[in-house]
Length: 199
Image (tube, rainbow, N blue to C red; front, side):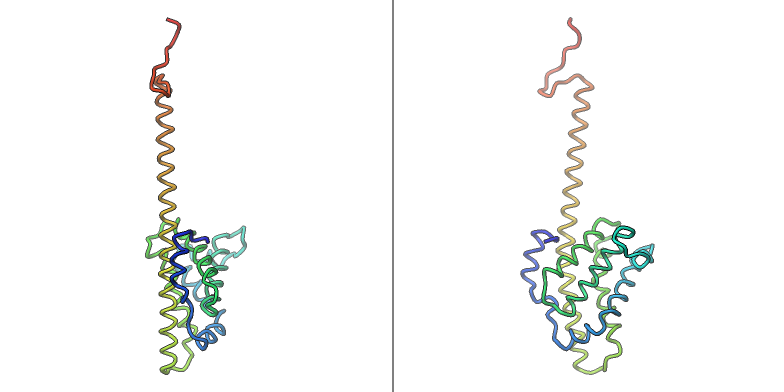
C-alpha cells in the first residue's frame, strides 16, 4: 500500500470510511463534477501559484497538477461509492506524498481533506432543507472526518520516512568527512599512521 505498513493497520480499523447512506451517495454522484471542480479550486488556494493545478494537467508538463487532479477525482468517487478503502488510501497517499515534502505545516498539508466538506456542501446547497438533509450532511461530515484521520496516519508515515532519510544522509556525510580527515592526516583505517618516505 502506498501509505506503508503503518497505514495498513489504521485502514483495517476504519472499514466504515465513506459508508454513508445510499440517498446521500446518489445525491453526491449527481454532483460529482461540481464537487471535483470546487475541491480542486480550494486546494489550489493553498498554494501561492494558484493556477498551476488547472493550467496544465499533463502527466509530464505538470505532474503535480496531474496527480492531484486525478486523485481528487478518485477520492470523490469513493465519497460517492464507498466500497474500496484501499483505493481511498492510495489516492490520499499520492496527494499527501506531494504535500509532505513541501514547505507546509502539518495543518496546512492536510487542510485539503477538510476542503472537501465545503466543496460537497456547496454542491448540495440547492437541496431542500429538511431533517433528512441535515442527517445527510452530518453523515458527510463524519465521512470526511474519518478520511482526515486516515490522512493523518499516512502523513505521519511519510514524515517519519523523510526524517529517517535525512538522518541516514547526515550519517553518510559524517562518515565521508571522517574518511577524508583520516586520509589528510595520514591515518590508516585501522587507526595506525601511515609511514611517509623510506626513513
